[in-house]
Image (cartoon, rainbow, N blue to C red):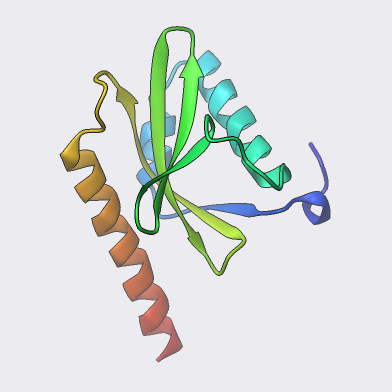
Length: 119
């Protein structure tokens, strides 16, 4: 693992949303998720196959393991912090609307907490 100062970004897990998804995955999937997160932290220009926009301010980390596809919602905070939220196994071509809505609620919850701490 590379030193923190060599990273372009850092990831932050917000509450237990990411952990709840991650802990349920088989070890090969966990390994691929961790590899993808490390890649996103270390590479300046991230290929779209690993990280792409969903809606304004909302992104998804894209992980493929074998024939299975996984998505982890995230957003950028203060430019270099990537906040990881809920994840799911993608079984259809289109990202389920309820998963996007859940991610947007979590993002708002995070932002509201940050604002409240500043007051």
